[in-house]
Length: 550
Image 1 (cartoon, rainbow, N blue to C red):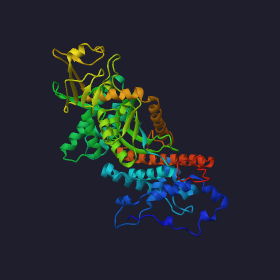
Image 2: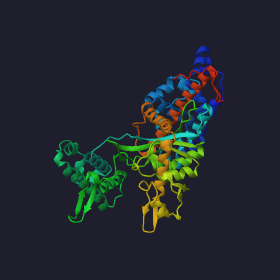
Image 3: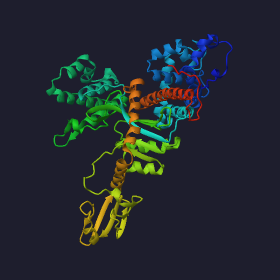
Image 4: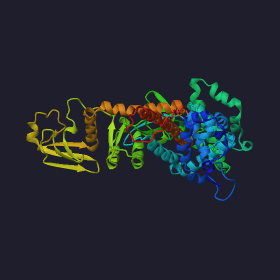
């Protein structure tokens, strides 16, 4: 049964805090603990978590704000569960931060943490992004942090980074064995044929994986896939319902084999025929494959948006999303930009060339956001050829005149193919001194230019990069790579301790809230230093004398 935790709001006459020496009490109030208590713990909205519990049955839940605060602290300090429980039991800073005033006031069992996480994971799995309880808390706390530290959100930057779940990198043969073993283990061993029972024997793994010559790997893989097919046929013949591991096996067989009509049998696909969305682990069906540069990666991609105004005392993450690593940067920014605009004062967006696209520009224009690209991907323009940025073009749909101020006889726009056309006087074009540079094509009676709207946009963007302060754009965007690095080094986001897209999304959200709290501490410390020096001009509340020690 759900119940909000309000006991911390009632001051107590007798507590360990009141018994502290005044000097220790003063030192405690200058650390991170009271800031966490006031601006994180007290601002956690427990109401949405009521969906995790019964309305009228069972014992009252363990306080949500304590459990969630412990999760934030765990990922902020990158602690194990054992270390977290030890800190919660014997570290008075942690005790104070989670609304308790006596050591041992609440006994926190390891199982309590596990059950809470399990409820959050299941809720996320059932409701998808609409049931992301952690993102709702992130959004509320981020607004609180921005107001407290006077952080402007009109200028932001975006970048993506690859993240690995808790899975091992495997070759096709090792993966085939793992998938087959889990499918066999989920079956009734007593009813299995002898050929499939052999899979459970330790010798089977040894012979399949470790006593295999490189030349016989293909035949061993065929054997493993054939046993998988036998298992699925056995399930079908006995009218049994497929278990989850067996469904995964069925998917794996479809991805790894193809039917050969000429030979009338299944054959193993070549490595280059395996899709990037194919199964990467028997333990994580959501992970996908991507090769970036010279590095192969299995897992997910995390896309971050962060403030970048030079007036800010610190920069905080304003948005995040986690997806399979085959999702492109263009797809993610198209989805996230309207939501970021709705929640913040976004006006200028600094990104790299991977986010460039015609549809991205359309979304940016509709949201009144100005895009700044540090570079562009794709084919570079030919040297000595005229750029369409030199033409006078109205709304990227009508060519009004060429760089030599010649107006077309007629100009059209094909909305279906997104193509601009312009017909010029051929006599004037032949006499033009820049004819060799011009993209115009001379026909019998007229000179014609046809260009895609995408090309026009690309040329305009390249011109802005050349003359619009590319150095400043690159400088503003580059710092977010440091944020990704900090999340991986400090918050352990490089290799997560969970598997699956939904669990990973929950954990990444908690880590980002923890990162933002660290940034809040940095911001408040800088503001306090400026206030002490008499140069604070932001007009935000300053915590005088706060040392913000960790």
